[in-house]
Every structure is written in C-alpha cells, then in structure tokens.
Image (tube, rainbow, N blue to C red):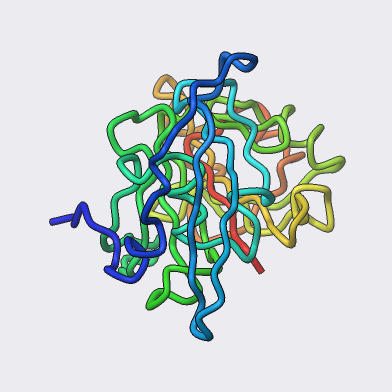
Length: 234
C-alpha cells in the first residue's frame, strides 16, 4: 500500500510551508508559500514559492523548476502542496520497485510518478512517468501524438522496438534527434500503441524481436500513436 506521509525529516523541512496568501493577479495560482529549512550545519533559510493550482494547464513538462535534475521531494511538495504528494514504491518498466513519490494522485490527467537516484533522501530524479490519460506534454508530444508528430519534434526518423510484448513499440533510439536531449540532461521515452483495428498480417510485419525504423512504410501504414511516455534523467 502507498504511504501518504513523506519521511519525517522532509515533513519537518516543510514546517510552515502551508501558510498561503491569496493571489490577486494569477488565476492559475493558489498563492504563495513559505518553505522553512534548516541544514545539517544549523543554517536557517526561508524561500517564498508560488504554488500553482493542480488544474492549471495545459501542463508543459520541463526538466527545470520543480522538476530540475537536482530537485527533491521537498521542492515538489513546496510547489504543489504537501497534500498533493504521496510517497511509496514506484514500479519501473523492468518490474523493479524503488521509493518514489506520486504527484497529484487523485487527478489521473495530471498525476505523475517520480523515481529517484537517491531514494533514501527522495532527491535527484531518475525517471518521471505519466499516466495513459495524461494532460501533460513534453516538447509538444502528448498522449495520442502521431508518428509524424514525433518525427517532426525529433527532427528526423528514429528506431522502434518491434511491436508485441511488454516493451513492444518502445522508441529505442532517437538517432541523435532533438528528443534525445529535451533540456536539463533529460531524454523523452515513448511507447507507441497500434490501432485496435489493425489487421493481424499488418501487425505481424512490424512485430517481434527486431528494430524497425519509423520511416518504414509498414510502420507508417500501421499509424501507431503515443500510448504512454516518460522522461529519463541522465
């Protein structure tokens, strides 16, 4: 079961962060919060942060701000509200689990999972995963984006693992395109889904343990779309 409490030392670091002021000028903001922190040397600091509404959108994900490569669960909770962050074990694509957080768990369109490079401290993101109904987008790519959309955003064709199986349709190589580095040292991960109406013969031509090019006529004729996506941090 997922715990609804952050580690004690993180909760202490957030003491007083829920003091909000009404925001008069920005309809997409809940207001401001004060994050009070004390480091291991006893130095004290206060930071004023703007807290956005979870429903503000559209959400354009970037590896910056609250999702920067050096962010922590404290920063995420400060920006989105501690009540919108749940800690627990996050499942990776290979089936392994590691401590992480779920942001906005009660809103499937905006919810996302964050796994950490330093799981003990819930710091330094390793992977951010989005739901299959996500309203977030990354470099213009969102759920349901077409093969043409991906090639345009990447600036060139790319390689896809053969369809079928747990990893079928995953982009295996952006071929040095723009989506291999979306800023902040991050790379977009995508798994394509085939239309339910696609015939068995057409599906067989692009399935199995092989790599296929997005420019392959059989792939383009199949018209796959983005079924799920994630962001990997280097």
